[in-house]
Amino acid sequence: MTGVLKRSWLACGALLILATAASAQEDDEAEPSFDCTAAVAPVEALICADTGLADLDRKLAESYHALLATRVGEAQMLLREEQRAWADSRAVSCGVEGDPAIEEGDAIGCLIAFYRARIAELQPGQGGNAAPPSGYGWLMGDWTIAAIHTAPTDPRKADAARAQLGRTMRFAEGPVSTLGGASCSFPRYSAEPAPGPQFGDLSDYPTAVTVRLSCVGIALLDVVRLTDEKILIGEGDAVFELEHRR
Image 1 (cartoon, rainbow, N blue to C red):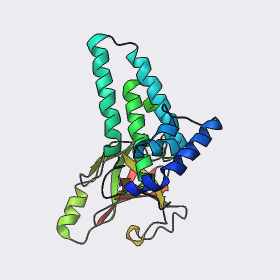
Image 2: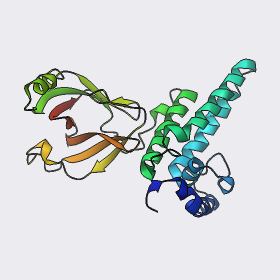
Image 3: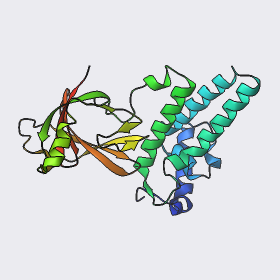
Image 4: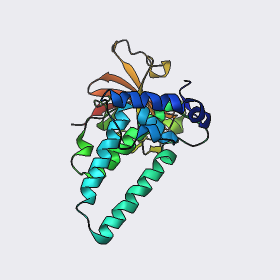
C-alpha cells in the first residue's frame, strides 16, 4: 500500500483490509461497533483495519447508548440527531474522502482525536482523561516563551519575535494554534529526523529530537525537545525557547 488514501484505494484494497479485519475479530482483537464484513465506506475500512480506532469506535457506541438511555422525548431525539451528524462528519473532517488525497497515517491520527473528543463530550470526566494516543504526552500542556533562540535578521520580524516573549503556547490532542495564528482542530504529532540547521548548534543536547506538528497532512510546526522542561520551536524566521509550565 502506498500509504495514501484515494478513492481507488478502496476499490482495489478494501477486500483485503476487510478480510484482515474479519480475521482480527476471529482472534478476539478489538472490534468496532459495526460488522466489518459489511463495511463499504472508506472511513469504515480504516476503522476496521486499525485496532486502536476499532476499540474507540466500540467505546464511543457504548458511551452514546448509555447516555441515550438517560434521555427521553425531545432530548433523546436531539441526541440521536447530534450523533448522526457527528458520524456523517468524520470522513469530511479528517479528509478521508476528500481531494487531494490524505496520508493514511494522518487520517488515522485525525480520527483518533475526533473519537476521543466525542467520547469526552458523551462521557465528561472520563474520555478526556485517557493518555494521548500519540505517545507525546510529555509535550501536552502549557509552555511559556522564555527566550529567542535565533532572531530574524529583518528588524520588523525581530520586533515581532520579541513581542512573543512571555506568551503561553498550549499543545493538546486538539485543538491547537501556532504563534502565527494557524489553528488545527485535530493535530497530529510525529517523530522527525534530527533537528535541522535552523535550530543552530545543539551539541549541548545530544539527545535532542524533533517532533513535527501537522494538520491533516500539512506541516505546521517543528518542535525540538531539549529536556523534559525545555523545547525549541521554529516559527517563520525565528526560533523560540519555551519552558514547561507546571
